Image (cartoon, rainbow, N blue to C red; front, side, top):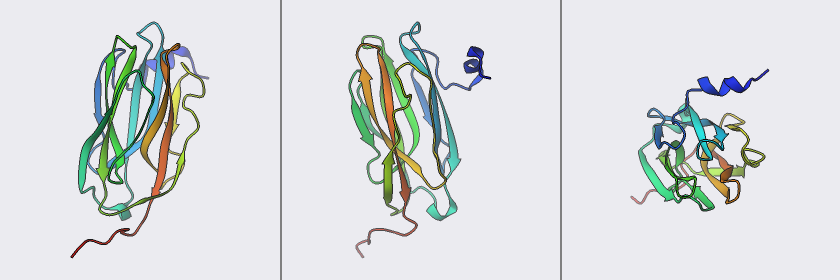
Length: 175
């Protein structure tokens, strides 16, 4: 049975209204994202993330970068550029809109390409509920997210974009 106390010892990366910067260790990507909402604390969420090493067949990331900033108070869709996989998140809270801006940390794995992509259902299912994404199947990776923002409830729902990656190089290098 979960009690309301459970959310205190989750290893949150932020306090309410605080910015954070979370990066997986080199060679790992995000596999789980959890959040807990509080209206009293600026209609903000606490966040925690889990990483896992990528399968050996994917090799080492050849490059990692911070992708575009997604502005607070707006709906947005963000997918890692250059076929990257999400390996981190940074976020800043804005009191004026009671929302956060978001930026994904993306890593590129040689010349592997995403396929069989899908979007999760809304997380959380209803605004202001606890949110939890655990990547459902080994071999799926988070490539980004599509979010809606409720101006009334001052909260976001997320649909995460999950893809498999080819186990062969999918583009020829110019020799």
